[in-house]
Length: 224
Image (cartoon, rainbow, N blue to C red; front, top):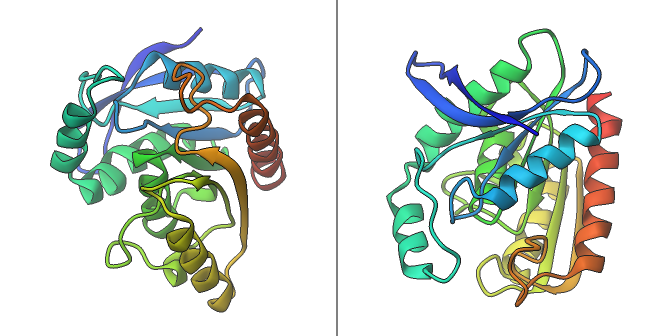
């Protein structure tokens, strides 16, 4: 459904991403951030789904073409560990947001796993955003504090997650509420990456569909 495009980062460098456009011409935008596997077919599929839901959706390629197979967690961890999160967010992801906002559209940001952490950083650092939806990822507090979040945020988290743990989620939500930020966090009796239908061991269709309906409604409300 979508196509690979090239867009400009704020520093003038070029980045690539997968773009899927909504049927209508004046649609709001959603930037979609990959899991630690890279810009996989599954993430492209979610980007297509956002387009079908009425959003122009762009998934920037943070690994520059590298996609790690699902069984190779060591390679995925290596790719994620070598990613400059701040550069990826304030340059590549911001460039994607600016691309979608170029005709005056409101833009939201969402991401999964690694992309969830990037989404939190983006919600603090990217001025083009109007809303953020986080899926099971929170960065270290020295990178992005709850009080620094600038846009309304919705979060979807798994109670059986040993990476983005319930304790981490509770602390971040508490910090946002204490800072007077708009936060709506949901928890599911599921495993990390429960939205990924290509990973049968963790996918939870009921939780994934509920989270999806909440996310698209949230974006519809804040992006118009």
